Each structure stands twice: as structure tokens, then as C-alpha cells.
Image 1 (cartoon, rainbow, N blue to C red):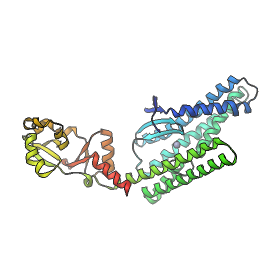
Image 2 (tube, rainbow, N blue to C red):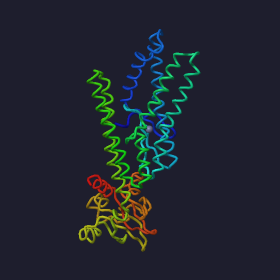
Image 3 (spheres, protein in one colour):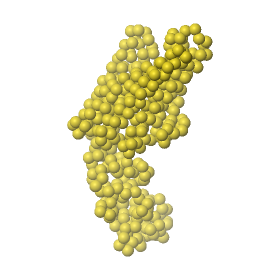
Length: 369
Ligand SMILES: [Zn+2]
């Protein structure tokens, strides 16, 4: 669904256009040039309608992008990175680098988009009034964009997740109850009901009025239901990981002296204990991490001549996480560092490691629960 052609950066965030958007842009331009514009300002040449149609569509989609920029700017102000902004078949989306952690953050991030749309609606409406006499055709285009922006505000403030209104609803329930999971369930249920309503309305209009374009509404409804379901599943994972301390998912380390060779490590430790994670110590100081996976990367005939120091990862190269952190902190840390594991540090000393696999398994168990 997401991804697409990268077309540059907006406020420092990579901006993508999904190929599906060109289809929608074409449809909107066509519907304006052949329908609304000739009706509103009759008697112009054909090319004027097409040019104005395309311009109006561009202004509208530009407004949708500005809406996402609104969400993004507030999100960044709260220290939540924004991975990308994408324009696609159903509009725009800003992909946040992590979930919000406080109801207050969610509330303001969710409101920022509609606030931008509302401001743009007022701006275009003002422009339309200024141009009423001087350029009535252009003024009509601006009026359409103004109305569409207000439509975007109304649509997005519907209280169902993943719409902005649903996020506001979640933030309010979350703020009052302090329960993230419950608040997401409420907002996601809203999203599913509204999605269902869209499907029923879309199908009804398509059948009763023989208007096939209403199927679009049903498609949007189906899209909403799917995202609402996914978002709830994500919230459950987030919640479980938040409540699980890193100490509960970490694996303890077995300390081994650095003068050993890989062969000696295998014979003296791995084959007898089955342990996978080792802390290599030199002169009483921890210097590196060695896993059985790293050992397996060294060809067997070289084991007797390879010292641990040559095969281990130096301690300073392994990203760290404090033992006081939650599993969700560890997950973000591991994601941003692209590491396979993190060193869990307790009061300056190595307490264990937490691996990508274990965090993934914990997420899977949370989803299944
Ligand atoms: Zn929005």
C-alpha cells in the first residue's frame, strides 16, 4: 500500500508518491474538467476547464500533503521521528517512527492535521472572494479546494480509528482511563463501525441509484476496517512490550577468558552447556560479545587457530540498553541501530543481551494472546 516514488523531502522528511495516486489525480481532474467546472462557469473553452481542473486537483492534493506535514511537525516537536510522508490512492499518510507514548502527544498530533486543513480552507475561501470579480474562473477552482478542505476536516474528525477523530477519541479515553489498550479498542471499534457504515452506504447507493462511483465509498470503508483491526493488534503488542521489563526478555551471559580459541570455547563451554551468548573478559575486564552464530560464521578448520578476540564483537560496538528499560524501548533501540542484539547494562556492567528474535517472539505471543 505504501511506498512509491521518492520525490524529495518536506520539512526534512522523505516524501513519496505511490503510483496509485496518479490514477486518482487523473480521475479528480477529469471529474472537475468535465463536470463541476463547466457547470459553475459555463462558456469557456475546453482547455481552460482541463487546465483549471488539473490546477484545482493539484491544490487539493497539495493541501492533503500540508495536512500530513501538520501532523509531522507536531510529532517531531514531541521527539517522535517521522519516517515518511506518502501520497496514495486514499489520500496522504505520515509514517511515525514509533508509537506515541502519552495521551497528550497523541491528542495534539492528531489535531494538527485537521487544523492545517481548516486554515487552508479559510485561506482558499478568502482567495476566492478576492478573485470573485477579477478572475471568476480561477475563483471557482479556489472555492472547490476550500470546500474540499473543509470536507477533509469533517471526514477526518469522524471518531473512528485510524482517522484523526479516532485518534483524538483514543487520546481522550486514554487520558481519562490511563489505559492505552482499552482506549485503542474503543477507537478501533469506532473505526470498524464507521467502515461498515461506509460499505453499507456505498453498496446501497451503487445498487439503489445505479451509481457505480459509490463503490468508492465501500472501498474506503473496507480500507478503514482493515487499518482499525491492524492498529488494535499493534496497540496490543505495544502495550505488552511496554509492560515487559527488558530484564525479563534478556539472556544472561556466560563469562569466558579471552585467551581461549574458538575450538576451546566449543569443547569447554558450548558443547557442554549449550549456552549461546558469551562475555569475553581480558584481565578481568569485559571486552566483547561472542555468540554461537558468530562462531558458526568462522569455517570449522580455522577454530583451533582463531582466538576469541578475533571472532567477538568489541563491547563498544554493541548498542546498549539500560536494565531499567522496557521491552518496547529495546525494540526501538534495536530498530534504529539495525543491530541484531543489545547489551543490557546494569549499573555500568553487562547484565545480559536482548536479541531481535526474543523481542519478535514476545510480539508474536502478544498478538496471539
Ligand atoms: Zn490527518
